[in-house]
Image (cartoon, rainbow, N blue to C red):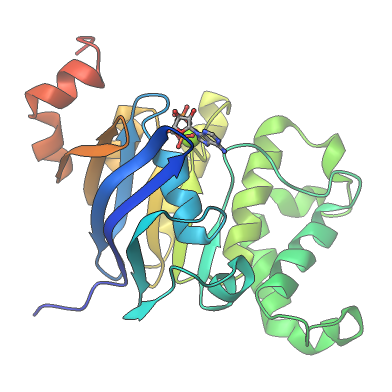
Length: 249
Ligand SMILES: Nc1ncnc2c1ncn2[C@@H]1O[C@H](COP(=O)(O)OP(=O)(O)OP(=O)(O)O)[C@@H](O)[C@H]1O
Ligand SMILES: [Mg+2]
């Protein structure tokens, strides 16, 4: 049975002055799909992400989410529709505790009606946020300021924050970047264990990680899509081996 895509990007282009960072990209994600975005530095992956989350204005084309055009909606409206994201670099409140940061993430997804004083009414969300935190073993550091955590833990917190907003579409920009092999392994396990009610689009530089996590892969170069398919198809594409693996496999 064919289901409608949860995300449909059509002929999307984004220019920064003379630089065409994203060049007529079209992409569809089925509900529950885990989609990996690969490509060399400057390929346009983050810019495409930012267009989907609302952080960057598109120049041409359109973005549909659950059948609705969201191209011109502001970030917070998209977040409330169920689009959660992390950034390539860490973006947390460093002087606040892990718990405070998780609260902010839960609140952000529920809009202004969610004031600090009403926190206790949201027991279910709080429980969910704590459950996510414990998957990353952040429950052991709930009361610590974020600045005292290791870099890997801070990245994990960011992902926990994105999950705490209860997203239907989760956008992850290089979630494992800079992590130790151990933290990276744990992260992959957590991402694998997420329910299929969450559709995932992620950027990942490690080909093996991307291929093991994704159902489908899109490869970008110079703003354009140069290959897409299942991990097996991508692995067998000569152009991908040439530009992405640099002949190392
Ligand atoms: N705000 C901006 N202003 C001007 N140019 C930009 C801006 N953001 C990105 N670019 C340019 O757009 C192109 C695509 O950049 P982008 O960050 O999307 O690539 P990327 O695939 O995420 O790369 P990386 O793997 O290094 O993260 C690059 O040439 C970059 O220099
Ligand atoms: Mg990037």
